[in-house]
Length: 122
Figure 1 (tube, one colour):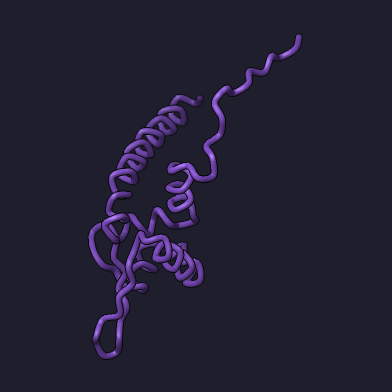
Figure 2 (tube, rainbow, N blue to C red; figure 1 turned 60 degrees about the vertical axis):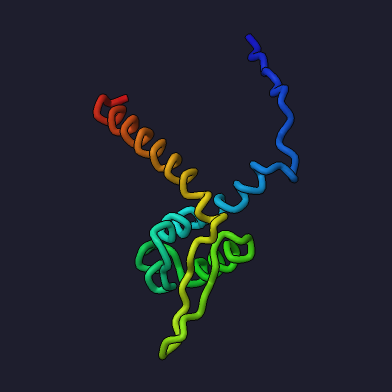
């Protein structure tokens, strides 16, 4: 008995697709977490390190630079002694927050299903 494979009739999104562009921003390692923690307001590098304990300083620096280059966050040097740097979501970055909220909501549902399946032995 052979298994009949159905072909997907829809073409994959082109590289210039808006979905592909947006996913390239939020699919980076730790990028959604950084955006999530900046949604409430400005944060310093050290605060973000505490917010996301498993992230290394090197990866956090890379992610912040990448998000800044894509226009999702801004980096501002504060005129304090010693100088401090704060990161803030741009208006474009703020537009990603409802999408992350929706992803978190689905995540809660998926976790609940997994708990139910674990409790029932399935």
